[in-house]
Each structure stands twice: as C-alpha cells, then as structure tokens.
Amino acid sequence: MKQLVNNHLSNQELEDYQTKFKALADTKRLRLLNILSLRGKTCVCDLMEEMQMSQSKLSYHLKILVDANLLKMETKGTWSYYSVNEPEVDALLSEQLCCILKPSK
Image 1 (cartoon, rainbow, N blue to C red):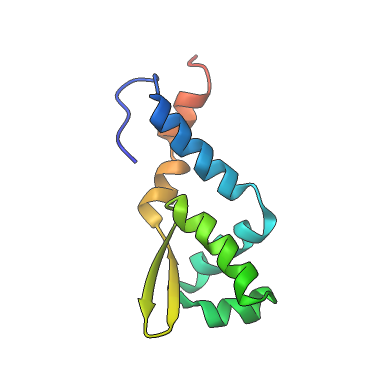
Image 2: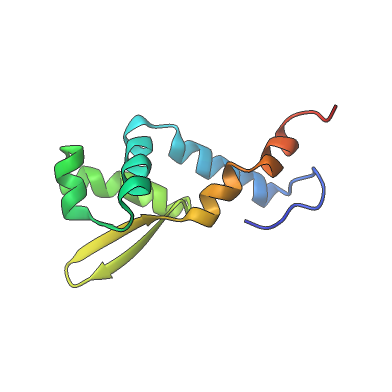
C-alpha cells in the first residue's frame, strides 16, 4: 500500500480498500487471520484440521485473503503454506487510514 500524501484517494486505492474490507467481512477469514497471526507460516493441511473445513472450502477463503494481499502463500511440493502479510495488515490498521476515513478536528 502506498503512502498517502493527502486525504484524496484514487479510484484504484478505493477499490483496493474495498477488496481488503470485503475479505475481512467474514468470520471464517477473520479466524484464519487470527490463527496465522499466532502461528506464523502454516501448512494448509494444518489449517484444515484447525478450521474443520474441507480443503476446497478452505482454499476458497484463503484465495480471497491472498487476492486482497492480506496473506502470503508459498508452495513447497504439493502443500501450500500461508502467513500474514504483516506490512499490508499494518497499513490497513494504521492511524494513517484512520485519519483518511474520519474528519479532522
């Protein structure tokens, strides 16, 4: 996410935020982010057990988070490993974004 110089967001920046907030607007995906923030890089096979989901359903939710750039994915052999994209999550939860989305005093 680029550093914002002023409070005016481009259409592309607005669409990027929309994608991220839509990805976060689901309990299962928030739980995945929570698990990964506590564990660090984790194999999808371990997430299936923890989330009690089939690989296809889990992959659907993970893809949304990866597409929103909130997770990073690394493939080793036949398994994929996921971790939180910390700089992206930090930017999304930053005071900077807060100041853009609320009026200045």
